[in-house]
Image 1 (spheres, rainbow, N blue to C red):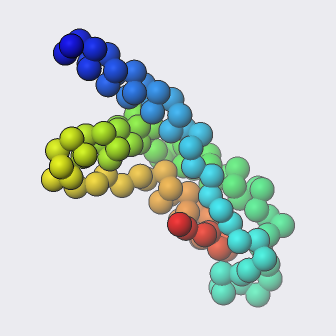
Image 2 (image 1 turned 45 degrees about the horizontal axis):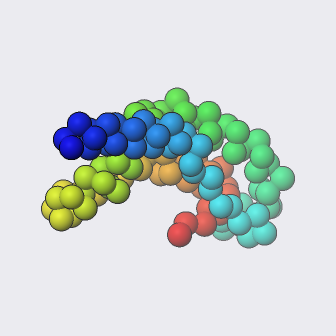
Length: 108
C-alpha cells in the first residue's frame, strides 16, 4: 500500500513538472492602453510575448515551479492548509515584463 502511494505521488510530481512549462498564457487587453503611453502598443504584442517568454524561461526554475504546484494542490491539503501557499514566479515575471512594455495584462 505504501509503495503505491509513493509511485502515485512520484508520477503526479513528474506529470506536473512536465506540464508546468506550457501552462501559463497571459491574457492581454489589446484594445486598452496602460495609461503611460499615448499610442497603443498592441501591434508589438507578438514580439513582446516572445521576448518576455524568453526572459521568463531564463529566470524561472521550472522544477521549483512544478514543486510549487504539487505543494499547493497536494501537500497543503494533506496538512490541512497549515503550510503557506507558494507563489508562482513564472506568472509574476511574465506579467511584470508585459506591463513594463506597456501592455495591460488581465489577471483572474
